[in-house]
Image (cartoon, rainbow, N blue to C red):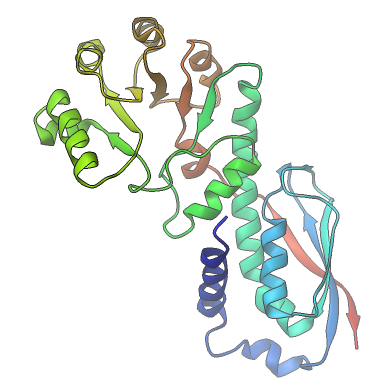
Length: 284
């Protein structure tokens, strides 16, 4: 976790919500008042974002007392209490909505990721997320994916080469694209892994004839074709399946022998878990 990035995100998110001040709380609550509050779970799933919640509230109130009852990655059900805080009341109300938004979203992603992971837990395949994330929240959503038991793929365009259909078509074909990538990496003294996407067995054979890649990603392959492709590759390169993979068919894809499965649904189709922050005691 990049803590500079995290702190900057929290600062910007609080500024977005508080702006010139929380006038409602300022109008009716003493600046010296403290309250005790609990995070109440109203859904079923996997919890994510508790450690982040503590960081948000401690930034608003350095005297915060935070008592964790359920840790990130643990199963939750309606009626559970995840944590309790003793906090300046104005600070509590300033951080309430940001904290809930983050916890609900991250817990939704962790829950979805956990459900996918359970489907293939006895198989050697690894489930990967994608770049299909909320802008500027990618690092948090990928954190939630890890909490849920799946794995992160590349974090952006900068940390891995991935030749997809548009790159290949725009550069004049598979061989030309691979050669151009190697020339670019050498000229810029970069050491990046290379994944290439193929759409059919013809393209697969062209990649095998050319070489120079680390992983071959079979995009939208039907299951019988994917099994054949994995057999053809025969361990020469890492294999990945993508496209059209959901909770109901991910195990079938895992059984093909593919090394990785990338699933955009881990983030782009995850919902939010219901929870609320309730003041349990007013302290003068």
